[in-house]
Amino acid sequence: MRRIALHLCIAALCLAAPAAKAQVEAGSTAAAPPPPYLLVRTLQSLQNEAAAGNRTAHAAQGKLLGDLGQAMMAQAPEIWDDQRNTRAAVQYVLSGGQPGVLAELLKRGEPAGLPKGLADGALAYVMGDTGKARALLMPLDPASLHESLAGHLALVQATLILRSDQKRALQLLDQARLLSPGSLVEEGALRRAVFIAAEINDLDRLEKATAQYMRRFDRSVYAENFRQAFATGLVRFDIGRDPEKFPRLVATLRAFDREQQRSVLLIIARDALIRGRFEQARRAAEEVARIPGADQATIARASLYKAASRIGIDKADGALDTLKKIDANRLPADEKDILQTALRVASHIVDAPEGTTQTPTVTAEPADLDPRVKRMVTAAQRSLAEARTLLDGAPEGADKP
Image 1 (spheres, one colour):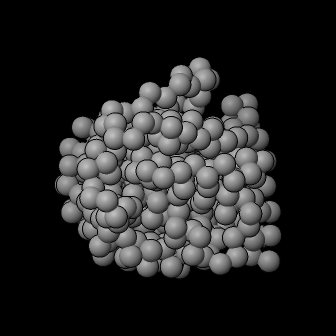
Image 2: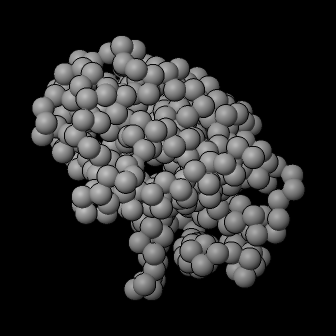
């Protein structure tokens, strides 16, 4: 019932806002739009619904943001003497609304009831002037603001120093979560915390933030983007490359269900393979195979990534045999490119004369081959000379990878 009532309220506002603007332009005083603080309260409820997984609410955001902007621009001047409404204007713009609302308000001078620099700094932030935004917003204490703005400010502050002071950024993200529990602000703060933890190679923080996100926002409309960014971050920042740390990475993934674990591990394996991090790709692919319940398409992808990751070090034709057995029809289009490229590279390795330490020359790739797959080929070729040198120089009977 709560969601139904919310959607009815949204529909009413979407209809009322343009009509109210037309009435104001025509000089009519018959009806006025709801005050800004009520409009933004509805927007906040809608965005929190999206964070909880309501895709209908998420889809309605774009139109609602535009309609609320019209309603705010149609307000009578005296409305902005109420600090509830000036706070709402800042919150609206920081929530993805039209910056013109805040720009018009600032033309009247410092908005009523707001700390000096908050409105101007918020406008600079959404307009991309990060230098001005840092100068105006970083000195402010989020805890000193009204609860409607406190979490927003902490999140913005963390974003502004994400690259320059990651330790402080994490503290601000924690503060944002505490100041706006259960909201889209908390959801966004957790996503950013996971990114920073991966970047600074902090597995403890990564484990904690990931578990918190999946426990609280696993149904969020942004959850799939979170998983993609999470996996890509693990590859980019080498979280899973260290053999001693990889088991902890796997333990972190237990915060996901089995299907989600497989999805993340496949992303890790694919990205690592394309980046030339073959050991990381192999480990991730093997972990996929250990999770029960996979369908045939998933099994085919895991087999592809594992075999392709071994073609630079597999002196025998085991990797080639595995690649030949993979049913290309079970693979997405991009993975078919990887399979064909891996087969070409593996064939040249197997066919190379014994004892050679030179990198085999691989035939030219198709002109339309995905550039990311081409990077995999380049990385594979770079590793071949070293790999073959190590293998050819090993004593007879020695163990090989």
